Picture (cartoon, rainbow, N blue to C red):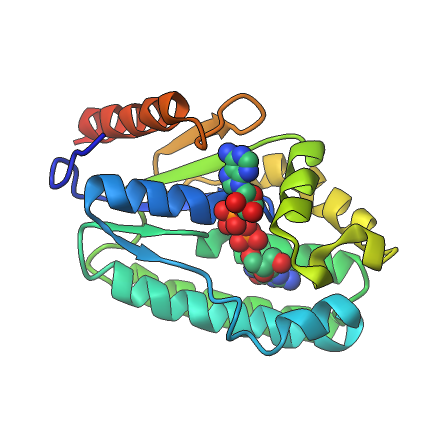
Length: 218
Ligand SMILES: Nc1ncnc2c1ncn2[C@@H]1O[C@H](COP(=O)(O)OP(=O)(O)OP(=O)(O)O)[C@@H](O)[C@H]1O
Ligand SMILES: Nc1nc(=O)c2ncn([C@H]3C[C@H](O)[C@@H](CO)O3)c2[nH]1
């Protein structure tokens, strides 16, 4: 399906690690002719260290992601036609989970939240303050774990790290709460247990649903 130029919108994907945000980002960007913004993993020097020693690296990683995300958003909100593979609004969720897991101190948490507030004020001053649409990829922990396994990044595998399953369960268990309090833009929920964009019919259905939603919002 090609709808290039039909919908000028800033779209962000949201959802659990491995839910398929990058895959959706590529699908949508190709179909709508928009620019895709991907979370950097290969050039992230802290991510693997975090998975090995979260207490030592959680704060540094949250700052890293906040900084890179903010840079992407500043670029993305200048145009009307972009897709981002994760929202800045989820960063605070990851940070809170790490705080609750004991990976960050009170002082680190306070410093992070203060910086986040400061950055959100900058977004408020921009011509476009928030996305046109947030797409939440929602699915069971089993689906997410099987995709993390399929992607095969060693440091994300639960067999290699006995604490990781509990971390994923904690994060996954909070995602619906996070989504229900999200109010910065219209939203669309896609059930990734049911919809599989590796099948063309499902991919076409997803794209049509998104285009319909954007046209409805226009
Ligand atoms: N519909 C699907 N069916 C099966 N596998 C899928 C599907 N969509 C994506 N995948 C696979 O699942 C893995 C995770 O997908 P992807 O990298 O897009 O997730 P993500 O949400 O961007 O992850 P992260 O939060 O870690 O950035 C990849 O190996 C991808 O090829
Ligand atoms: N701790 C932490 N905080 C974040 O804000 C964050 N955003 C993404 N990630 C991790 C998930 C995947 O392993 C990998 C790719 O998404 O990066 C994060 N980890």
